[in-house]
Length: 153
Image (cartoon, rainbow, N blue to C red; front, side, top):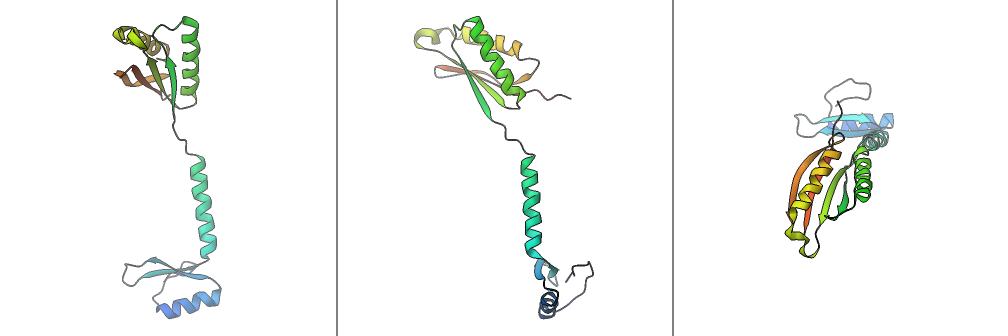
């Protein structure tokens, strides 16, 4: 048994419980598999409150990474392309990944080189702020490429 001030001694379960009741605290089993089992006298409610506070604080500092999507067509105009790339840059600056999807309609799928050319333009534009996580790949009538934010050292 470990007391609330740090002293440790071997007691029966009944004596340890009586000592905890005298102090108005709880007897908490820390290591049940040890010989003899290790218990501690403490205010369990206060301990749980502090533990939940620490967990909330650690969650506050975590950041979940989302995948934002930017959709293109193979014959996109220059200004529209620039606008979508600026959106992708903003997403990357926020720490999110960006999935660029080039959608082919009808017979456009017979010219995948247009999509690859568009992906290459995008790779060149985002080279400073992003790295290519997944190379361009045709999936059905869409071509996708995934960018992840570049880590600054």
